[in-house]
Length: 254
Image (tube, rainbow, N blue to C red; front, side, top):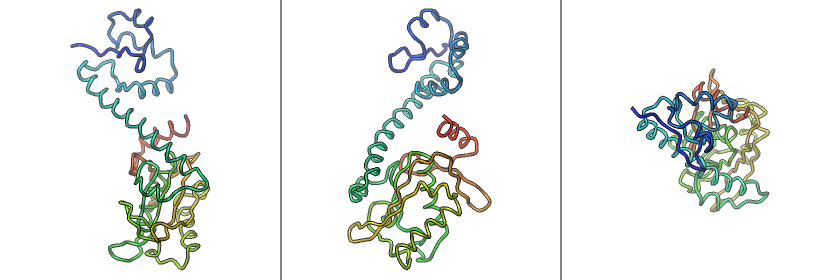
């Protein structure tokens, strides 16, 4: 059974040419411990991720190694592309005056999401806590990842809905309501990284909420449970306890 060996290329390489010569025809399981001793655990984890090396790769059958590495390489490429797109959007959102129409036309992404309403269920016409929870999940995801913008009053396909559906007395009352639910369920610190304002879009008034990248983890209270969300592409994902711990270690303590 053939053992996996590192791919020798200038871009994805675990060892230098001199190391390759010393390794010769040794199996990875034989030489890897010496290699690991040169680096810290943080450095090793970053190398494994960027080099698309699966866990315990040194013990895998070569074909299994290639299959698992192919999947990880696709993730690295996708994340790299998403970073480029997100950076472009962040630059647009960072400007004092930005083109809301351009944001809407570009559609939802890792850094942009649309919600038809803040609190109203369009199917029943009634206030619905689940709608508010959906909004808060998105905000928490932005805060915990790379920031972004939530536009309320626009459907997920970019069609104008307007904030009048939420039936607030005025825009100030709508802003205050958002502030209150954020403080209550995500904490005061989260609110310091959110900036809401109102704008016109296709003859409708919408609320645009700019989210900064939070310097600390933001948990969302859901009853007696605290949940942790991040952005994964154009969607919001809840992490398990172990995933949350690992994400926080890399994102906030790195």
